[in-house]
Image 1 (tube, rainbow, N blue to C red):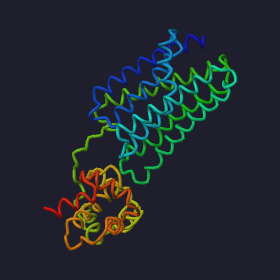
Image 2 (image 1 turned 60 degrees about the vertical axis):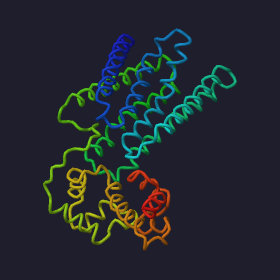
Image 3 (image 1 turned 90 degrees about the vertical axis):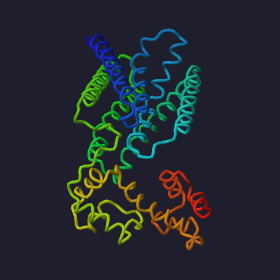
Image 4 (image 1 turned 45 degrees about the horizontal axis):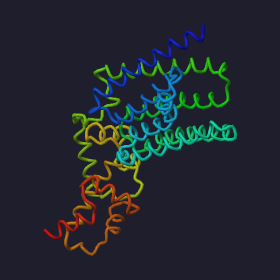
Length: 334
């Protein structure tokens, strides 16, 4: 009975993934990290159907899905929860490198001498990517201003991570017969998650995955003015490792209210972007000022609140399209 129920749930889960992928593809322009989500869904789908593939060449292709499942989970978390996702070229290098490593381990597993070692190495690599995803989920939480995304960090990602983690551990230590019940629970969880995902996408009121900047409705103009005056007049953005809690305390306002105003009424998804907007504004003024031409790029970075040159260069180029050096040359020569 368990076997029959397993196949039914497995098939329903596979079909639900197809529906979810179609929804993501259809709305890829508004869904944050759409391609990473599609990649993860594709790996889960291949994982569900790999047992039904018998043709050797096709199996060699389909097996890449189970291989890359933990990796794709990390990439999805990295893309969705980090407002500075990897460039496409860098992401592609990671995909190709990880695929190559897994295939090498798969080949080594065919030799009896390497079977156990390659299996342990493969599981260890999978657990490594799951841990990376968990770290990614939590690392940006202190600066996140989006209440929905904060809740999503806590529930949604950990649910998926638990499913992947249990899968990795069960397949490492259980015999084929002992895996029936855990896999039934796993397939049921995948089906439940996809049903929830489909429901979210059909819900007009849900913006969990919406990457578009919402139309800000200003309900607290006095607080917005207070924040802006405080940041500009007191140059509070120059403070290193500034947190939303410190800003709220200085403003003598509640933290949750300050966070919601900056997010929902001023249009910033995370606190770092909010702070950096003031820092880059001052940096551009300093770089255009001929009387400040003796200031080095590093001195400017320190002056406006960055503690190293690397983050400053990346943030400046992302905001202006130029490196600080090129920006200064452009305006000094004009």
